[in-house]
Amino acid sequence: MKKIEKPKLKDVAELAGVSMGSASRALAVPHLVKPATLAKVQAAVQELGYVRDGAARALASRRTHSIGAVFPTFNNPAFAEAVQALQLRLTELGYHLIISSHEYDQAQELVNVRNMIERGVEGLLLVGTEHSPEIYEALTAAQCPFILMWSLDGAHDHHCVGFSNEEGGRLIAKHLLSLGHQSIAMISGVVSHNERAKYRLKGITAQLLESGIELSSERIIEQPFTIEGGRAGLRIAMELNPKPTAIVCSTDLTCIGALAEARSNGIDVPKELSVSGFDDIEFAAAYVPALTTVRVPTSKIGISSANNIVALIEGRPLARRERIQIELVVRNSTAPRP
Image (cartoon, rainbow, N blue to C red; front, side, top):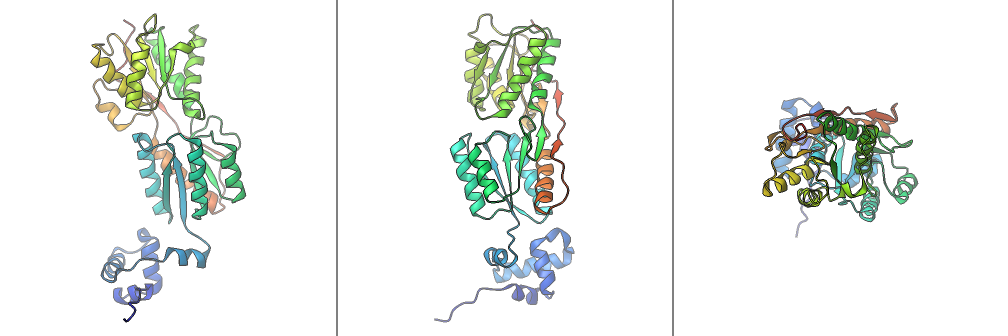
């Protein structure tokens, strides 16, 4: 039987009527190629069934043009939005993105990081600043450039793109204090190995303490960053004595869960109870009542992280920190103390 030869780049170029260089550019950086040329090359690729030989190309150039990103979860729309922006920007810069998640499991995060290194990524993005020493050791041993994204809190000397979670916690606390609330509870994420939950809690407790209000341990309710976590947290909070007049949630997802549980129990939000979130996901403004929350510009984090990791890989000057500005968004889920 005659062996069917795999189509090569020169076959694509010949069929498209362009040079090998033009065909290569059309496949590697399509946004830099004239639309007419790109259309010809894409049509030839389709007709021939051409597939780029990534392994051979990487071997020849010693470059993979791939960047890894390890996220805690993709169940949170805030992370999903950042991934979309990150991927689009990396494509514009001539790189492709490989993603994975660890569902808040440190051991799985280490496995994911090692897998990324073995796949030859040229750089790695990690969410947050709290990671096991083994992760940093693996990255250092592989001489793999990396950026910590999302948080500035606890970043130490690492390159970082993010915002202050502590500042976000303070913004929420100041808002609730201005409304006269003194009996406050927090539905927090699990703070172990998670600086986002830890520093949001730190900001809230510090701001309340400055006004003479102590957030006691029984009023800090650790739950998963999920809608069900918010529901469970609300049930626990409403058993406290005295009952809270305001509840702070670590994310918008937990806030939506708390609001749903409040509605199920006939609690009027915000007339009887104020509830706030964190992230300002798209659904936050559409929910009833619309969420008071802290707006985190997740797309900007994705774009800036892409710019920073590529600059680090290519040896261009880069600041150690890029601060992303956050802001309080006041909507209908908070009101003056009843």
